[in-house]
Image (cartoon, rainbow, N blue to C red; front, top):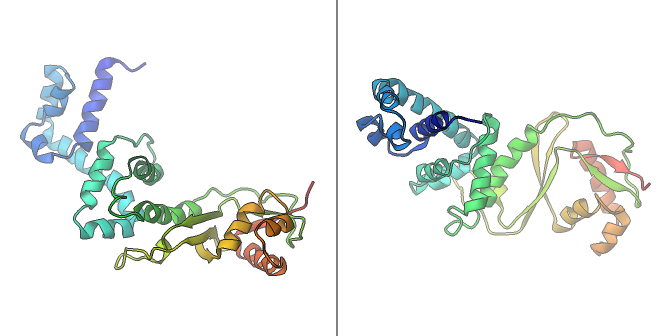
Length: 260
């Protein structure tokens, strides 16, 4: 169990890094210690070490903010045009939702915060989809490697199930967020279905799918291909089988599984 003084000290250090008003910290370096009711000696240490404390604040904030700027460049461009990127990041820091000590977990925590709070989504209905799409390619690229799945074959049949590569994701959005750029960050409002996968060279790829193909890839993971095609009223399974072969060769599909 953490001792009360240690816990108050940790909270003071968190405030030192995460609080917005740096000018107030510069004017009164002991304020974060005083607000946590630390001893006079601890408050004096914060004041005496203020140059080092403020340097630590700068470096620690950079370690939190830089991964977000790297992983969400289009979102940063969108909000930056309105002067709101810094406000968004500060609201995220104020929420104190980062619990992991790993840099890789900062961006997912930011996305989770957007989901939980709805920040900016009344003004920009596509904002959450845009953030998700930007992070999606990174997560697919970094998905842990695993041993090849056993018991699969390379040619699909009507009775088979589709087994996606573990890194592959099928996603659907209400906006064409994969078409945006930093220069043009506002997406077209149209239903969009994407396949995010790693190719055979390990590079992340996005492939736009038709609604029927997207639905087939989802359904055929749990029901035979012929049954899934029937549920979707597909006139013929043959074109779908050819596409599935192409996707397996591309690396998106691990293979096909016969019914047990």
